[in-house]
Length: 380
Image (tube, rainbow, N blue to C red; front, side):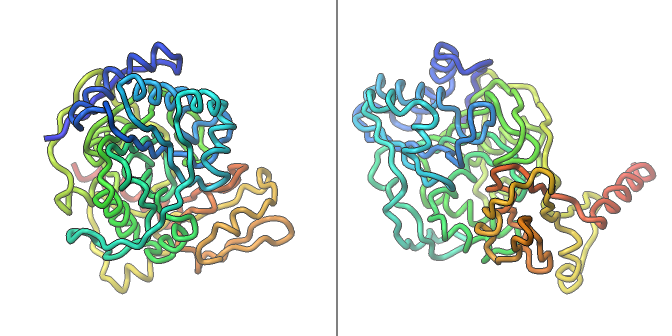
């Protein structure tokens, strides 16, 4: 039985964050065997720093408060290790304005570098993976995620955050390998979690991101942090609080026997249904069976597609560089999609610095939504 601890935090001021961490983080640290004398690694969500007003990364004030608490609790070594999509971890903490404070605390800030091919545990969906293995050098590993929407996986929480341990170029390869089978992508994320098994998982949802996440959404004030020794239980609990009861990683975890029972403790928040991106694929709740061949044929009609908002596009070309199957090109300064080759990984949307790419339901999906509403009216 896992415990998921919540603490209210209406702002990112020092006193508020210290009190919240003492209430939600310290009980989990005790369950994990304590902090004193341990070498501690923090794997934060550092997608790209776009400023305090856009909650793309974990909040710098909360990260700093966490490091101070670890220091006070007697951590022997504290290291922040991440592999951001853009820039580097040291550059991001510099842009966050906390580099000097972290240095004063003796906190090391590094990019992932110790990549190794590892054989996966027996219960994994994939057999072999190249992953950053710095986590093996530490006594306590903290998976520190930001609560955000995600065009492909609906939400980015603790399990999804560990995808950052995959080398940047290999991330594109994994997207290409799983294609539009998002269940396989969820399995891959779970495999990383089962391999790394962070001792503590922490979610920053004081100010989360909704809408066009994970890189260009809008802030939503949720006023809490959540923490657990079990990242899957944490994700299941937090996702439900955000109005998402069908998060694919949680569903696959339940089907694979990875999700167990859990108890919610502390300042458990009410459900706040945030604005989500269009669902990545069609899932009719009233149930329709599609034969395999027909499902493959319909897939392009049943999966959301990327769309460029031309007026917001700055023509930088990042989307084309980040596209695993190279299914989009820059033509006359704007991206043009070849949707038949698009695998719907939404890497273009995730890394667009202008927020000019969004996920859009297909006409078939919009029709299915209306048809489902009609069915619900006549079938109770």
